Image (cartoon, rainbow, N blue to C red; front, side):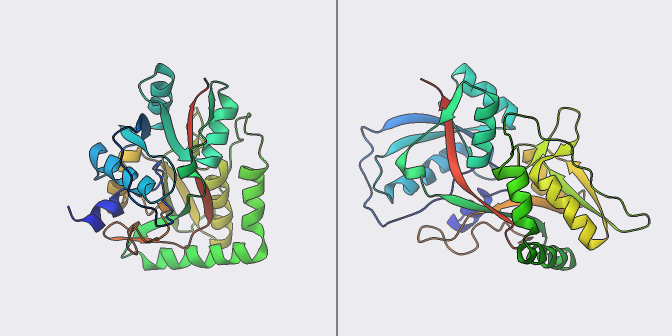
Length: 283
């Protein structure tokens, strides 16, 4: 696997992953580095060892003290939470909004304050097959409108920034239009309160609220389909879904342009940005 393809595959939607920033620092000797077992959602085409090498490269380009991050892959968020509580992993890699939600709902958790994580952020967007240009164009148009009229920021405040993270978010009803075309959108439920599926399998959270607004503006039906994290790209390529939430890692001097775009997939304009965050069990 070439470097570009490897880096592309580590950035999948509904995945928990880390971005990277760089100030051009020198590569460090890691012989005495602390070892941290880092839980994350399994990447589609990258091994744990490949991810370990990548994370070391990220840290080596900052002035932070190197910590050997040893990735441990999981199929879903629930199994990852059980692993950190049982001591199988030391930390979980996720996003700030997700970390805040998990900490608010489990008083055993707290944020990790490693310097190398600070300031790292990823963009959230939609992914479609590269031959579905019409759907991408519709999504980009609606997202631009929502940014312009302030409704996107309003949803962020209501469902992410100002939400009581200690309470289960309410169900979100996506409107139905008789006789209209249907767009099937995949969710994994592994990024609450962003990508969230409730205990009764009802979609909720920010992404579903965003879909409800998009459905209104497009005058189309949107069917929310729950998919496993490991099957999200396969579900999209097989036509089981038309769209899925994706994460786009910003370009920098370590990674070439478009490394976050897997083969045969096109990404919409970003609709949300969040900082990388790690959590651990309180000392």
